Length: 324
Image 1 (cartoon, rainbow, N blue to C red):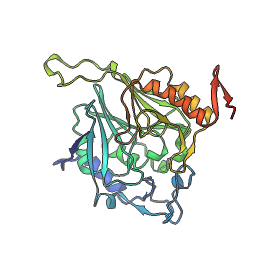
Image 2: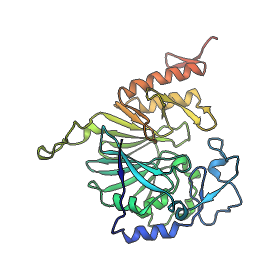
Image 3: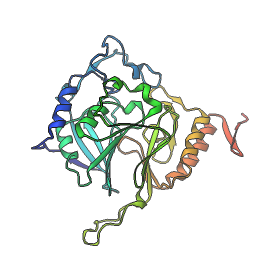
Image 4: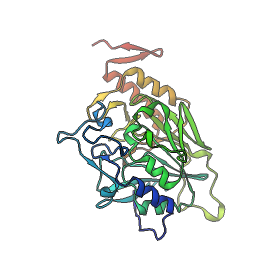
C-alpha cells in the first residue's frame, strides 16, 4: 500500500471546528474506542467491553478523550496499490482495537466505511477537498461506532447505522435534530452500485458494504489511468465475515478476542444473504486483509470448512451432524 501523509490544512470549515470543540472532552474507552456522552458515569465500565464479544482489560477500565488522543497520534492514508479509489485511514500509533476506516471513492461520490476514535484536523481538511465529495459514513457493527457522531458532525454528512444495533449506540441521547442519522434494516442503497447489506451473526445488525465496480462509468479518453482499473465486485466485510491472515479464506466469529465461534445457522444465514452478489475481491477493516481473487468461491469453501470444524456438513441445504 502507498502511504499518504496528511498535511495540516490552511482552512477548516467552521462547523468542523465547532463539532470537535463540542465533543473534545467526551469520554472514550481506551480498550474499544467507544465514545460516551458527558452524562455517562465514569465509575462504571464501558458497556461495549463488558459484553462477552469484547473484554475489560486486566489492568481495569481506562478512559481518554479526543483532545488527549490528538496529542500524540496522527492519521495516514494507506492507498491500495490495485485500486487507488480505496484507502485505509490508519492511526499512528494504533489505538483501541486498531479500527481502520476505509475511504471508498466512487464516481458519484465518496463514502467512509466504519470509524475509529481519532478524528484530526488534517484528516478533515483532506476529506473536505476530495475530488469526489464525501456523501456519507456507514458503520458495520458496534465495535466500530467509536466517535462516529463526531465524525458525521465534523464532516457534515449522513451517518448510516443498522437499527438492529441501536441499543449499543452509546451516544443515542446526544443525537440532535440537525444530525443526519439514517437508521436502516435489511439492505440500504447508498448510490448506484453501492449498498449496505445486513448479515447478522457477530451482532444482529452486523453488515457488509458491497461495491459493484462494474457499474462505474469508464474513465474519459483524455484522462486514462496509468494501469487498469478493477471492475469486479468487492465486499468490505469488517468482522461480519473476517478475512483470514492467510488471505485465502474467511472466518466466522462471534467473539474475536475471546475466540468464540459463530453458530452454524448464523453462518448459513450470512452465506444466504450474499449469494446473489457478484464479487471477486474482499477486504476486512484492517490493512493487508485481502482476498484478491475468487472471493465468492473462497466464501463458499470457507463455509464448508468452518462447518466441518464445528462438526457439521450440509446435505440438501440441511445441517447434518458429522459422525466422529
